[in-house]
Every structure is written in C-alpha cells, then in structure tokens.
Length: 501
Image 1: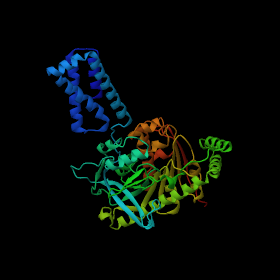
Image 2: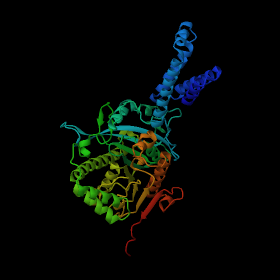
Image 3: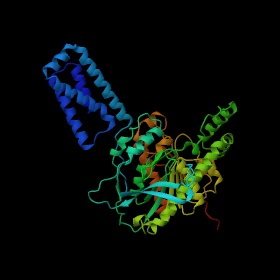
Image 4: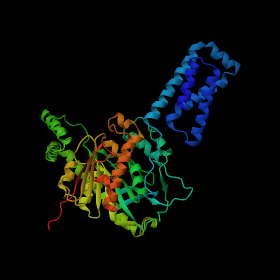
C-alpha cells in the first residue's frame, strides 16, 4: 500500500499520464480495503490512511468547479506542498512499520495443538514485598501453555490479548513517548487456543516452569512457550509481579516494575580511577574462557558494589520463592484444582525449571533448593551469588550471548550433566521475542547480528533437545557437540565422573 501510494505520488510529480496516477491510486485504495478487512486498522498505517483520505477526497473535490478554481488559483506551489506533505506522511508510516512491524509468530514444530489458560494466584503464606500495604499477599499471574484438543472453529488468543492496558504500561516502562506503540500486538494471533481441553493423546505430560527476565513483560518468550507445549509439555509461565515491566491482574489492576527492589536508584558517585581499572580488567576476563579468571573478576566487582549484590540476593529470593510456590500449585492442580483441567494429567516426576536472565538465575537457586526440579536451564542469567549455592546435581544447560561468558563459572562446578553454549552472534536481548517485536531492540544495542527468527529457531531447538533428553529420555545428537546446523553455537559438554567401583 505504501509502495503503491509512493509510486502514484512519483507519477504525479513527474506529470505522467493521468490514467497511470488513477490506476495506482485505485490499486492503493483496493489494497487498503483488503488490509482493513483482513488485518484490521493499526496505528502504524494512520499516516497512510490520511494520505488516502486526502488524495481520494481531493480528487473528488476537484470535480466541483469552485474547488477546482480555488486550487488552480494557488498555482503549482499548492500541488507541490501537498505532495511533499504526502511524502512525509508515507515516510513516517514506513519508519513506524519498520520499527514496530506486524509479524507472524514462527510455527511451532511439535505434533500437538496448543491450549492456554491464565490464572491469578495468591500466596497466603507470604506478604507482598514490593508494596507498603501491610496485608498485601504475594500475587502472581500465571499463563499455562499445554498440549490441547481445540474445537474445530476455535480462534487463537492474540500475542498480547491485554495490549490495551499492558501496552501503554510497557511503553512507559521502556521510556517510549507514545503509549500506543504496542497496541498492534493485540492484532497478532498466537498459536494457542483459550481454555481448550488438554490433549488425550497421552495420559500425562511432563511440566516446565518458566520465569522471564527482570523488567521484561511476562509474555516476552511466547515463541519458546508455544514450541515446548507443541512438543508435549505443560509449560507454566510465571509473571513475577513488580519485577516484570508490567503485570495486569485479573481484575484490571496493573503492577509496574519497582526498580528500587532490584537495582540501586538515585545519584551515585562516579567510579574512581581504581574502580574503572577493576571494571576494565573484569570485562577482559568475562569474555574469556578461563574459569578461575572469571570467578576472580566477578568477586572483585562484587567487593566494589555490595549494594547491588544485596539487591540481587533479595530479588532472587523473591523470584525463587515464586517458582516454588507455583510448583506447590501444580501439585494442587494435579489433585483436582484449577477447575480440574489438569487433574491427573501432570507428570510432576518429570518437572523442569527454566528462565531467561534474572529468571534464569532464579532457576539455578530454585533447583539448588528444591529437589522437585529434575532439570534446569538458564538463558543468559548469572550472578556471583549462584556460586555460593550447592552445585546443581540435576542436568543443567547454561546459555550465553556473545557479550560475556559469566555462567561458564556456574557450569564448571556442576555435579550432574552440564552443558554450556555460547551464541557468538547474539546479545542478551536475543533470548526473547523482543528483536522480532521491535527493531528498536537492535538499534539500542540489545540485540546482536543474528537474525531474530534464526535465534528463535536455535533457542527452540537447544531448549527442546535438552528437556527431551533429560525429562523424556530421547537421544539428542544436538547436545553431543558442535552442530553443522548451528555453526554460530559453541558447546561445552560436561558429564559427571563415573562412580568408583
């Protein structure tokens, strides 16, 4: 549509035959009608709608003699001003569509259709640590994706079905001046059907509990959640209220990120020359592969910022408790809670926990403290506090972006089977859907050179291979060593030593 209008504008500027202009304008109007009928209106296209309305209305208006005379009296400057304005609007629409595209979620690769349901859970045994209300109890929104049997004419939920409320909160949290920039996410369909019956193809399904990154919206790993559900897992995504960018509770209340709980706020003294030198040495160490050097660098950094370390300790304790509370709820659901949807259908003897960034660090803590975790996976999360925990005995996979190798220090001390993978062309933000949601992610340096869909496929395959191997017992050659399919991945495999005879 933008291209057709741009061509029509060019034809008018070059004074080509009027029938060419009319043909291109007519094609653009038909394209706009099809777009509105099948996709619906979206904010990125408002400048295009304006150009179409003004051009089409102007073309009709010029058939009226007084209006035609008025336009002719103003000479060619009027036409050129109108064309320049139209060009500016089309350029604005093109930039908006580029930065905030209408995208399609990648098709899940597994054999199962996907159902989804959300739950508002309250932990009566914990007070809410993020608010000052004395009787607030910890409350979490949880979304479950699971193998399903959707009705024949069921419609999937949207990527962000509460975008009207959540979108403005996310935009504000990310410092974007326009509250509507994520509103189009409500028009993007997912592959999950609401409240569909759980699939009868198997008696029970293994379970995965997932935690998002700090100050990221809860659905930021929807592609991965759908992939794992399509493979035959019940996937429970925890939205850590006040630790995510924004959470919308079932009654419409919005809980926004509370920065003071997780990071130092206010003015801080600039680092000294010694501190800058320490940070530079640490940066050189953490991009290398020498584990003792990484540990020493991290310890030196921590000594210089005890406040950040204390906040990390406090925040991780909250999130790990959230994960363990959700596992408690799964046991209740298995016994008939949650309306009976999952009664008797959860195989909690095959329960995995995984997370991205801060959620990945919380996963390490949870699996160290709770034997119900049978396999854990950490997507680019690390804090030195994890090195104070007992070494994980469960199978673990640690994934790193190309910026640092910090969690290599954690993988190196594992007692059980451990995998450490590094995606050299990625950055931290690439372990989410966000590089696909907005190209701003790359422009501000949070995404690497790897194509978003390539990264999503890579993450799906490695996460799926890890849990398939260690929860389902399926051989997975992808985890045996370097892969010709993914040459950008560096993989280290650490197997536990054989017991002494």
